[in-house]
Structures are given as structure tokens and as C-alpha cells.
Length: 329
Ligand SMILES: Nc1ncnc2c1ncn2[C@@H]1O[C@H](COP(=O)(O)OP(=O)(O)OP(=O)(O)O)[C@@H](O)[C@H]1O
Image (tube, rainbow, N blue to C red; front, side, top):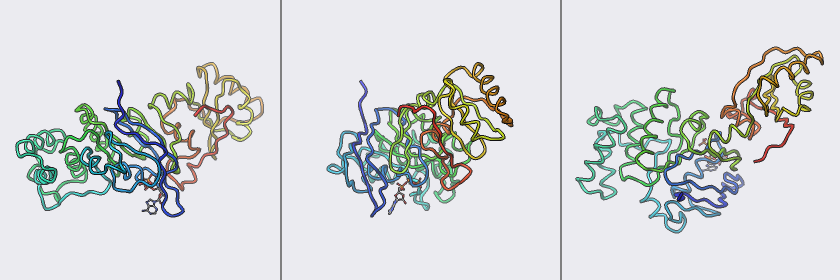
């Protein structure tokens, strides 16, 4: 039977007049990797800070490992591991000493500490660096050491706030491997990210969060499949008029329009629909400049549900949604 390691009900949080978290509810099951995917300022850090008891809960309910974050913060803290955006290592200690020190703080016995340090150095590929000072590690190694430290006490749940921010894609992919390995050890992982691919590749389930609200939750496949079977990117001499014409087609599920192109989600096999679409547009005297067919990506899911791209303030990515058929949320 699935058991919930995290349970959040109607969580709200404001900073003065700014409502950072607006009535959020979700659960995370034992052994899952669960991600909050959202742009800067969406409210991700605020939620993770409340769940890890670093920020006081204002309104709503939250339980972690069965403990109430408002009423039993010490029990929550003892049962979790945390890795935050900001590095908190001691740069004058070696890799092993950093882990050793953390184990002592949590009153781990010497034998247990040594065993765990050995396991974690192996897991995070830091065995050859065990006597290197924190300040002499690369950025990726420092983050791995943070990860190892967060896991020292074998927490039931690990919280990671943007674990791979600023990493190149290779280092990011290695980090995903470590996180999958940690999951295999039985740890539940809650992470925040603004990388589409990270959420897509790593998570068992994803919540898209925007402006303090959860917009939609599901597995990567569920979210993509809800959009439609295939997606056609179309650039024409008059996108607005083309969207107008195509909206009446039964096979078209929805159309997202931006300044350059149309993203057309379709219900049926693209090979049947595409000739029909081309014919209809050409008949109206509209020229087709580019046609591209692909399966919906997490990027498409994000644009579809939020109505904009992920990098806030980039006008090229601001999209205007012109749905033809409402989709269930
Ligand atoms: N200490 C604070 N005081 C005032 N406003 C804050 C504070 N922390 C966050 N905010 C505001 O609350 C909103 C949510 O911020 P939060 O840091 O939770 O978002 P986020 O999704 O984690 O963003 P990022 O990815 O940039 O960390 C934003 O509008 C932010 O400006």
C-alpha cells in the first residue's frame, strides 16, 4: 500500500502583501522522486522552507514523515536531509571531515559514522577526494559533498532546492544518476527545479507551480499525453488567420499562438491530419513557411498550462493561448 511521506493541505504563505504560496495541496508517496517545476518566484523555495521547518507555517497543514511541521518541528528536522541552493560546507575541512562533523552533530556512533562515510563517498564518487579541503573542490564536487552530507543520517526524505542550478548538462546528468541511486536506497526525494528536462527525466511525478499555485500534477507521460497525440509547429505568412481557420477542425485539440509560430495539439494520428491542415490553410491564400512535427515535450506542457515560457520577462517566450477546446485540469 502507498504511504504518504509528505502531506500538504491548503498551504498559504505571504510576505507582506505578496502571496508567495496560494492554497497549495499535494502528497508525496514513499520512495518517490517528486518535483516542483516552476519559474523564479513561483513559490518553490517558500514551500520547501516551510516543509523543512526553516520558515514558519502561516496557514494550512503540512506533515513530513507523519510529523506536523508546525507542532513537531524537531521531529521533522531529525527525520529529513536537506540540500539547498546555497552551499553550507566548511571549506577548511576535508571532504571526510565535513561528513564526520555532520554525523557527530547528529550523535551518530563512530562505527556507524565511518561506515556511512565510506558508503556515501562511494555513492557520490568522492572517494579519491576524501582528504581534499572543501575549498579545493570543483562546483560539482561541492554539490555532491552537500548531497552526501544531507544523506549522512539516512533520512527517510531528502529535500533538494534546485540541486543542479548552474551545472552544465553532463554534470547535471551525473547528479541525476546519484539521485536515482539514492532513490534505490529507499529515500523519498522532494526537489524543486526550473529545468524542464530535470523534472522530466528524474521525477516519478511533477507538480507545475506558477505564481504560488499548483497548476497541474502528474507523471511526465500523463502530463504530455493530456496535451494530445502529436504536436505540429507551424509558421505561416499569417499565423493569426491560420489559427482562426484551424480552430474549427475536429482533429485539433488546442492551438497555442506566439509571435512567430503556432503549436497545434492534435487528437489523431498526424499523418491523417497534416494534409487536411495544409490544404485548409493554402485554400485561404496563407503561405506555409515551416512545418515541424513532434511529440509534446515538458516545455510544451509548461507553456500549455501556464500560458507562458519558463524564463520570465523574455518577451519571445511569452505565449498567448488560444485554446479551441478546454482541457480538463
Ligand atoms: N524573504 C522574503 N521577503 C519578501 N518576499 C519574498 C521573500 N522570499 C520570497 N519572496 C517572494 O515570494 C515569491 C516566491 O518566492 P520563492 O523564493 O518561494 O520562489 P521560487 O519559486 O523558489 O523562486 P527561485 O527559483 O528564484 O528561488 C516571490 O515573489 C518572491 O519575491
